[in-house]
Length: 179
Image 1 (spheres, rainbow, N blue to C red):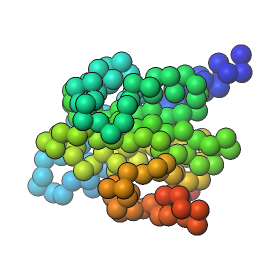
Image 2 (cartoon, rainbow, N blue to C red; image 1 turned 45 degrees about the vertical axis):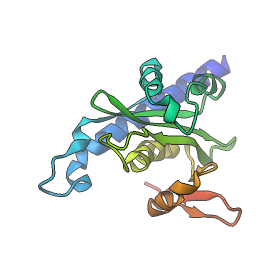
Image 3 (spheres, rainbow, N blue to C red; image 1 turned 90 degrees about the vertical axis):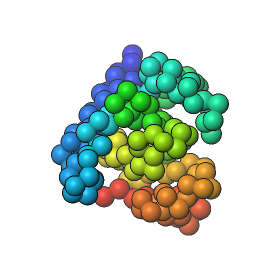
Image 4 (spheres, rainbow, N blue to C red; image 1 turned 30 degrees about the horizontal axis):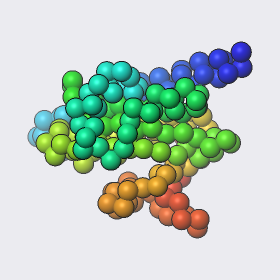
């Protein structure tokens, strides 16, 4: 029974983090796009990695850096994990899977990937968008830092631009600000 309660509690935390991320985009849409530009963020939504997300991922799986089908198994094994699909209207543009360490003080982004198609509407924004939801979840479970586990070399500069730094142990981490 404890595992079921834990799973349900964290399911609620995951859902609230995604909802808050959606609300954040709605509240701050003017801050995210310069005046005069059409706000594309009104069509962005954050959801769990569902069968629909995996089906949409299948359209670009051959070009993917990762295999995302196994996330379904990970979600069952790791009740505190956080899974995220990032959509623009009906188009899947990104996926993210994160898992806290045992103490929950550090949330590791295990996988983060944008759709390889260079023309999708959220190109170059997937990491920043994912970070909105991941940060919300991390704060909810009491994490103090977010870590990028085994970052792809080509993405390190982008993560650093978003506020990540290498710590003394060589991990790419970002401290969370307290509310």
